[in-house]
Image (tube, rainbow, N blue to C red):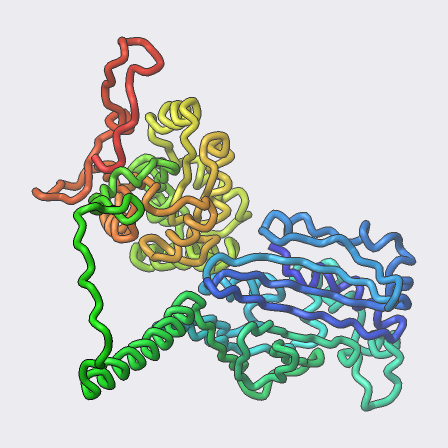
Length: 513
């Protein structure tokens, strides 16, 4: 994927040099209390810089960001300020879990700019503590606005100019002047409940500002806490209850020491067996957990469920790499695949690290064309579509591979939600994958049925309240296995009382069966 900064700024920065204008970029990381959030990149230029850029045509026509949109970035419309005279360009990408933030930041300018970035949280009663750490390094200077492909197209020169030409274009005749001084970079984090860090904090926003060519003197550190509203109200209620208890206890002590008070005798109240309808209560009924469940989402695993066992991407990788003359160590191949399935490396770097050389698109097409789908998957999905069952897929996979296979087999017609480890930045059975599923689908765990071939994933799902079914492979099932077991999708159906051949001939089994 093309890096975000070169796409937005290489053209703008070059014309900014021609007019000695300052280009300002602001990266904002907004973290929500549940750990999801968004990263926004904002580029600002003034009228003079805009006019210089548009000597070659409208700015909208000069920015090609199709590949960024395909990678999940939402590119905003160009805002032309009529009051302040500034033009703004924005790009936004969301993340579902904290672990995904570093890879989103790396989309912007590569891991050399945002290094060792981490967003971690610690939970305690009524409070969640957040810690953001990392290093921002702009010491590469003008090279940040380029990449190997761009430099190759520009005769190996950054922005197609020598250092002397860039200084002349920018008007830097003074020895103390540097062209990089025209680029200002801000990194901001909004704080909802205050925080502490080594950046400046004003108006509940933590901010770090650098000029191109600079590197932070010390790693970025930011700490903030979020208090949960419900426990806070509970504590207030407990304080009030405690005060009332003390008052009542005090009155009882006073009455005890004063003794009974003299006064006119009052007639004893008449006893009655009548019961007011308003206060008659029936004994509480037992909660039947199955009654509160309703199957709203059918969740399928990837390996061994959608993809044929042994002929899925991960299962074919070792033999494919070895056939192509790549590294022979099976464990090393598996480790590098795991990193790729977390979205930590690009496709180019992945295949290169395995020793498989060639055009990546051709390598992956040949590789993925070997993948087989289970023969009973499409008929099953077609039946689910007829019955208007919503289906999701929860899978550990390299994101571009999953996208290719979805299109190849036409699965998007049947599967509404795709939760892919390469996009989430976590792998099953991590809770982050299940949380991404819940947030994306809007369905509670108790109303989901997961069909998977991995016992560890089923155990994690069952712990969250999901109904589970094991789609059996070649492994033996021990006695007392806690999950229902099927050998094919056809076994999810059971005969009903309908006549054979009718539309109601079979029905999907109860998730709890």
